[in-house]
Length: 573
Image (cartoon, rainbow, N blue to C red; front, side, top):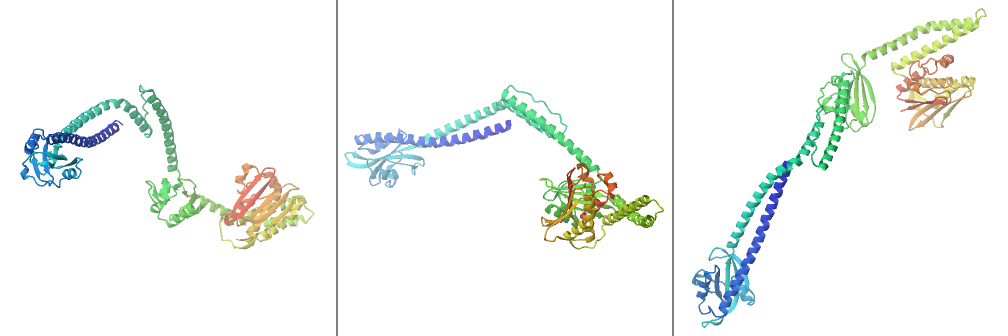
């Protein structure tokens, strides 16, 4: 800061010196000319009086010679421009002066004084000329009109003034140097607090650096500022240290998890990337880089643009050459700094286990179907005979039917998980819902439950599999009847919503506790296990509904309040 102060003082002083010198020159020039004009006018008056009184009327050369001792130049000029007398040279060699500015002015207006400043052709110096037309009362030329001209050299006064300016400049420079020297000592005390502030703020950006204490000065106002800055810097340093610590923890976690994570900003630049992501996408991350420069895979780049510009979540499995299966996800993020997160996770073992599980369910289902069919057949034969306990036989038959339904659901769920192609056709949702409602009317009536269908006059069509849509309605209606007490209502609705087909099944039954809602689509998950066993549920109904809807890209939502009922809504995109 001291250097800035001195530099500012120097520039200011130079500016003042320049202005002062220019002003002095202007004033000096003006003053010099005014003084010369006054002096020349005075001398003109003196010589005019001498000539008009007849002192030098008869001898003009004598009068011109008289002027030599005065340090001025006197010239007497006739009306025709001829030089009659000259103090500094011979009049005989002088040229015609009728064209001189001051002479012309004097002859034109004999009451006025003509004046001009120019370099003398005869003497070669700059002179101030003043001239006046007068009548000479001499014996040789009575009543003759001549022009009396007096010239005063200007350079003598200018030389004096320029010398004065030089002395002034020297004095000014000496004073300036003294001021600089004094200011260095004077600013040292003021500069010290600012240097402390600079060091204090510099320590903030140095992680782990020990903060130096503020040394107070003898000025209370400066001390107040120093203490405030000290407090702010300590808080800021603490915040930055905390941020650095959290950043280190996050970096540590990201570098040690097996899932690849990469973040992109709105300009599609990669701004963060951990080591697993570098390995999967095959590039080394050293800092922000455009995604198109780092990744050459066209499918990935297309999905980046699709996810960002359509705000669409994308997920797919990618099998690499070595057989490893990776689940790649594109998650749009509506943040100023981040627009997209891309994750890549090795799910080879998970997919293998899932496949084995699907195969087990399919094989077990097929293997169990044959003995169950035999049990059902024999139980029906036994129930027709009076020899055996009928209640036992009916229990066997009922449980066998329940196991067969369970195996049927398992096989259906296994087929959905395999995502095998399903025959699609144009399905009238209103008609399909009506058929499902009709199939469950007797069962609803047995529990004194009002089962209704709400559908508009305009048909609602989708491209899907008729059997799968019937399965969706059947499972939802079956669940609603199971968990609705006698005297309740179950309403099935089909409509158009936001330009899409939408269906819902709503009841005023026992409802679902909030803690169960996230898990109701899991296999074999029951919110009320006792009721489920009594009603004969398999625990797979909602899981099948979820898988069918996922296959067709439909959104399933559940809203429920305990004691008030449940509504399951499906919107087909």
